[in-house]
Picture 1: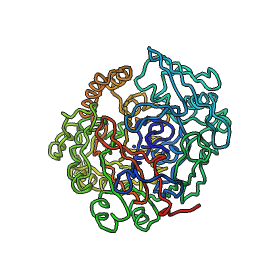
Picture 2: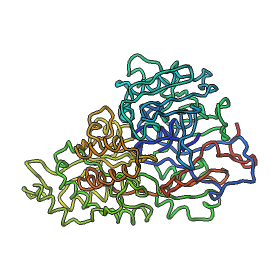
Picture 3: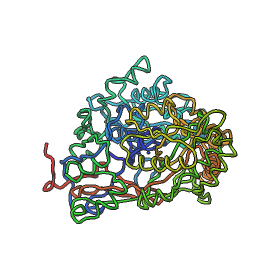
Picture 4: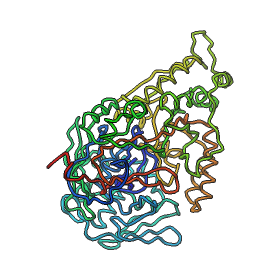
Length: 564
């Protein structure tokens, strides 16, 4: 298990993990996956790792464990341990390193990629992994009937994947792409003998989507709905075996309930809510059992405006809506200062983010003037703005039992009401919520995106992604200049030049406000003190911290809690 390697795919719950790849496209998140150091986050160099014990953590029940059709970070938290990819990211440098492929070559023109596979890798059912499985997995990914349009867009320029021999695979591309090595090295390798299909629907609904068979350091044990999923150490793993015997993912949708489970000793790690971090964990008792860590992560929350709806077609309206949201007050009152106001889609600590762009101010008076300019006035005196016979009433969709989401939605609803906009808050269970987003059955939504080490905004912002099945451009944003920038940036291998393009893109999105970019939050983490050697590393060049639970986690025999 090595969360430095994240599933190559695109949406997840409000942004991250690693399912069988080392690059993470934008992932939709509601609770970020993260790790931290035990024992005060300091490595125990004097102790020798031993096997045993379990890690029990909170999760929201996923819809599938198929790494291609999965749509949220909760699924990747599990799949990251079960499936592997050809390459990995070094957690200290974020450079690619061998994994299922022991070496690789890239042609000078960036059009041919050749991977030489290890010969000692077996799937969890004992069958050897070969080039046949890699080619099958890639072809499944590219099959238009497979529900992974959000992931498939990263491979559009790959013409062919072919087997050169049992342990050599070659990919031929039609044009260069600066992230091609990341993505070709990053998709999950599935067993062909298990997942072979004739029609895409067979793959989308395969029985092993709930009982995955991979090559990873952990094997699937059980899925007991609505309680938990468990995975166990793969004793025949081709690489260094994990130390922890079992990882249990308990399904606890409510953050308050999850915190009580943590306090009662029935869970070992948790992402804390701001109030929990600030007001409920600063005690000697808590600190005696748990270590805490916070760091800014590459993600942002947002309000997404579906531009297929009449309310949100005019950018003046979208700008006005943003100026009706007091984001700094949210930072201070809801997040206790544990967040930063976001202005665009790029991580605040990167050169792709234009630091010169200032957030739209909280300015109701100016917002109301913009609404009037756009034709939204209260013509019938009922207190609600209207235009061409359409009242400014819409539903704000958000995941159910999101404590933070509900607080933000309540603040938005009240402020919008004062300006003549009627908002109905519509929470839904995660599976229903995501289904509605994918089908574009929503007016507006509250959610988050998490970003990978190298960012490519194509998935979320290119016009084509509004038309693909399960695409991430759910709000129907279409802008030719944005498309042109994204397409040219994909061909640019000079990072400085590419970041200059992205800063221009940032400026366009700031002006258009297809989202109201809300906040980049700090990850607020707690892990039980009995865990050792849970490394925390610098997020290469980004100035934040990244974690590597992976094979490094272990617990001394004397304090192990769970025995097989």
